[in-house]
Image (cartoon, rainbow, N blue to C red; front, side, top):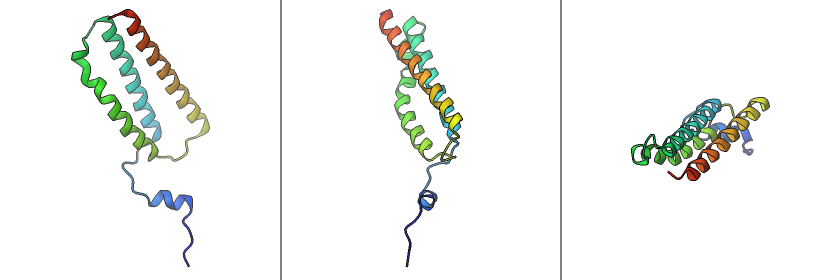
Length: 110
């Protein structure tokens, strides 16, 4: 007689893309976010043209999807609560700054 697999057995028996620490993936998300902020502001101020850096803008959706898959399969499966809260706050702060940079570039008229 076979018994149904437990949650841990199902998770360990599934194929892995690549096992990366979740903390590392969050740091890469933050790096991409601040890179986007810098690129938006450089474009808004006229330091560079969109044509010069368009490939960086194009790779963000692809890298976000890949990083999400890596995060889902990352280690450890559960992060400590304090670390999780710090990560969420850092990601939210980065997102708010990204939105502010986006609107500042729109309002600047470049």
